[in-house]
Image (cartoon, rainbow, N blue to C red; front, side, top):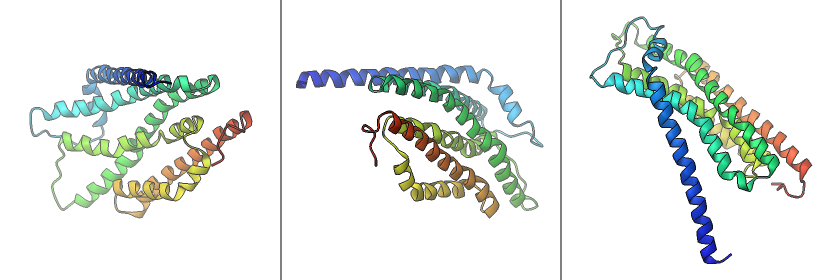
Length: 246
């Protein structure tokens, strides 16, 4: 291929990448606007189990709270769209079987993201909030602002929505040859260390809370390795000479 041909090829790829990014960003904006229309009832549902009302310190605080809530819902909608755009971008390099298999991963992205958010909101968030309330009880008068309350909630839930995508991402990367179970097994100690650090960082400083978060994340990593093995073995059975052994 001549230099001119290579430049054209690179330009075509960049244009295709630009197109996929624009579609993903536009999808996020549309979903954000749609979610914002329902932000008020969602807000009411999220604070329905609180004893009192949250406070705001400025006229724009509630706007930012609604935007944060809308952003999470928009992200949930955008993740499968982004997955589809990634699939369309790499599709020319995949075999017909790989295209069909990779396309099947996209719905799982939305399901696992929702599962991670649910785990963070229904398990981790009330546990941490209860711990912090217990520390403050009888010592200070607590008054939560809406902005800080929802920022705190998102810090505990959004990371889990992203971490729960691990199995699908690992399966896809295994399918296209970037990862394999041997590499994942070699990375186990480092992965365990990073997941443990994340867990300890976002949970209260007590052993039970740490275990409640660390264990699901480690199980998730091992489940990802198991899925990678399954995909890898299918590749070996289909084309043993083409699949790297390490």
